[in-house]
Image (cartoon, rainbow over all chains, first blue to last red; front, side, top):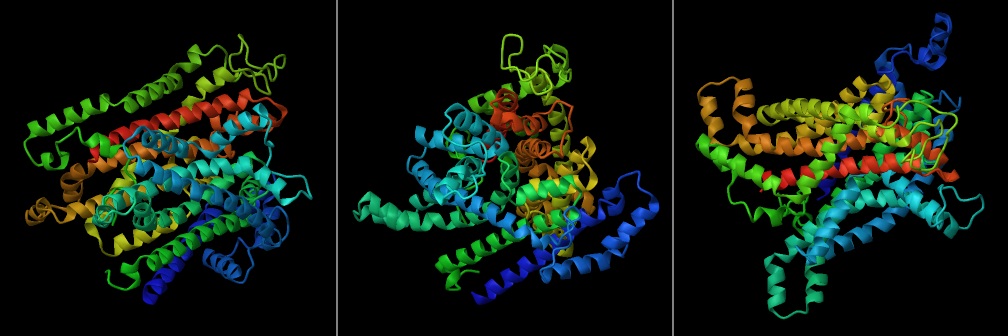
Length: 317
Length: 310
């Protein structure tokens, strides 16, 4: 068990290093000349060279990667081209706001989708199953900003019951702040609902068809006891993995939703940085998204191991 | 681990009951039976309501992509300062936007770029991903390990973010979008193909091919490839849906199709700033267009998957 966890953590670290290489490649190698990109085509060659030297992009690539990566390990995320300040001095509040929106969406979607999946499984093949499956599948394929637009038009402009932006007036109480986050959270919920519900449905159906459930039914247990005690405990195991994997995508969806609702989170920060060719900020933001995702999958794997007695007790391969 | 395939369409179980022929076992049999299986699958596909609805919507957008610039009521990029932000009316069915362009015409013509880039990118991704996956699954060893790690690392970010990062670095253009999305998707497709190849690897026909001393390329593309075409076709339709999702999203973020070219995602990005002022039509209609297209592709993909994977 401990060996497995250590191995899993090691693997995640290798992936993280590779991810940092990919981000470094995209952010610092592909764009070519950073000084030229910032100063534009009409700046003198001398000015470009001076700026390149100041930014440190005229050094060999290996040196650049090393100083970037080791800087991150020391909490130094680089200096923003645009803000002329260390990225670490302003990025954390953005990250915090994103996590708040993500957590809100998460709290809504997890119970809702598990419930939906179980209801669909218990009514397998009936109309309610078809409606749930088709609707959730369709919703999860529509980009977040598309469903967001429809929601704004219906609930903010049509019924006028929710605000158009995600930003509550300064000094608002917590419930008011949450009210502003409802509309931005729903597109994220739509995307995740389909995946989690589908997994919960598949897990429930598998458990329902198992011998132990048949035994439990045959020995005369009431149906709801069978479902609660025998079906749910087993069906939710694979669902946990999907939930964690989807957390990463939730963060990805944030980029889009934050942009639509002008919410100052990590997504808005990344887009602004991209528009200003502020690569240090962009790289730091994307790296954070990668770290959150890797951490989520790691926790899911370990949790899964812990919850599954076959692996926990070391009997499985 | 799970007996029920979690990634298969929920309806697959219901549909599979009607078909009894297993395409995998038939492939090795006589050519006649292969043809019959294909015809049966096609008939099954055409009998599926979801497939027909999806195909009709897709067909509509393809017609728009090719001919809309001729039958659209207005020129999609003609601005008119005398009719800015007009609500939908008989003259402008979907209203006009902030520079007086006809929203209906822009929605029709807006199908063009996305329906050009998405299939090309998906095709590139499928060809590339199939090649990588075949090599990974058949060769195994250090190559498989190395590629596998890189795939894992790249996929530890949401696809949209990876594509976004590279498009920002290189600069948005039709070519960049196609290549970047194609490359990113090839990683996912490689993973699927690799899994399919691993299942084929131990079968007798491969041992026979090895004994005949066939070249690696021959074994990969002539022996294995035809047997893993099913999952590849499914993967293609699924990725096509995601390609549209990704392109629309990148355009919305300002790094996809560039204005003034009519494009749904880019139009939504610009017009959504006027939503708060109540100008809903110029944003809502392109949004509905994207929704109809992705849902159509997914209906088609699900139907194909239900017929092929049984």
